[in-house]
Amino acid sequence: MKDIVFATNNAHKLKELREIAAGKLNVLSLNDIGCHDDIPETASTIEGNAKIKADYIKQHYGYDCFADDTGLEVAALDGAPGVYSARYAGNDCISEHNIDLLLHNLEGVDNRSAQFRTCIALRQGDDIRLFEGIVKGTILTERRGTGGFGYDSVFVPDEADGRSFAQMSDDEKNAISHRGRATQLLMHYLLDQRQ
Ligand code: IMP
Image 1 (cartoon, helix red, strand yellow):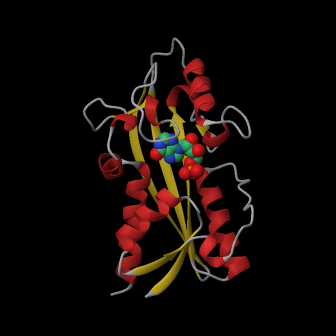
Image 2 (spheres, helix red, strand yellow):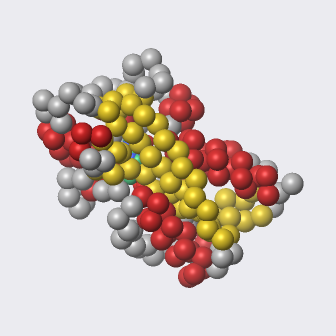
């Protein structure tokens, strides 16, 4: 089976990918290859950060690799928090602070349209390729639901039944989510290569 590195140590993301790739690709984590580096995420775009991470692993560890980066893009805020979604309320902040700031910045705003966007960069040899997944929805005026993570409790996807991501099971969310979609595109590409 071919080895490929997923530039993450996020257990949830690894489990998801390994289930999809089971028996077809051997998905290694950063821990698996002995990488404990603080990989810089200094780009000003989501795709830029995904590329930086994939390039870093290829250059320093020699493995073919893919890396993801995600942002919440809010129309009324000109696409913010976008690439800064993890640290919207400041470096080392927690998700609850990010949500508080988002709701504050949208107080009295009628246009609540937003989207989650994930970019996955795949680096194989000198080749670099991007896969994108988007889910469109709206931002609530207050939190709803207790599941998920990040901004899930204030995001309602257009194509579901009015529940927020935090009110859905993992399977329900993965079926329509930004990351689920980008991951499916990546896996189709990688599995096609094996034929
Ligand atoms: P990352 O690039 O996957 O680390 O995502 C960056 C930030 O976007 C996270 O820290 C979360 O705040 C937010 N985010 C990413 N994916 C999701 C999601 O599926 N639901 C809610 N928030 C998310």
